[in-house]
Image 1 (cartoon, rainbow, N blue to C red):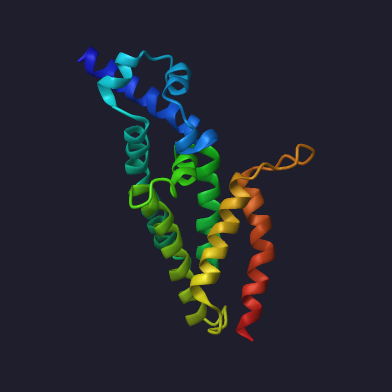
Image 2 (cartoon, helix red, strand yellow):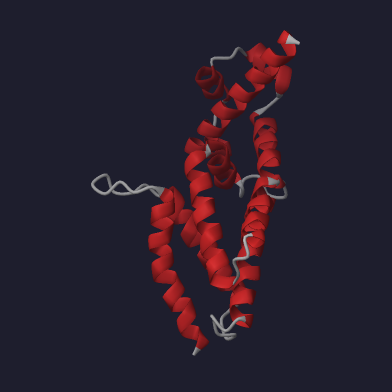
Amino acid sequence: MIRREQAERTRELLLDAAAAELWLHGLGGTRIQDVLDRAQVTKGGLYHHFTSKQEMADALAAQEAGRWPALAEDVSSSGARGLSALEEFAVSAAQRLQDDIRAKAVLRIAEELEGSAAASVLAAWHDFTILSLQQAIADGEVGDSIAIREVAATVVEAVYGACVCPAPASVPVDGPVRVRRLWAVLAPGLRSTAG
């Protein structure tokens, strides 16, 4: 039992260290030795769990794959619709990215892991955005003339950028506050299409 707990703790240390390195350097720039140094784990400890940085990245992506659809479900269950649901999701996503290095790392490497669980994280975010925009159109919040897929991609990219781009040192603001500020600019523009 103790060995199993120690092995699980080592695995989690490796995943946390890999996430930190992947966030900083991407999949291509991450070195196994840097992960080992950060986790303070030996190569033997690593190879007991993973054979490569790709396997660590895939394990992180698999963990995250179910978390983003669950976030969308939480927002949907709250009764929020349309632009309100989209804002709630964006702020929740910002909080998640601020609090969880694994979430940030998976989004950072999603393009490098095409066809993997990491891509499903972005797909879940994009799909929820499209659904919310469709609701906003149906509810008359947004005009039906918008290019919904392009708007959805732009919203996802803008929110992600607000979450991960460093704030000026003179004005340190956390991710959710930055996303609310961004939303205060985006929402009126979307509403103006309702005519």
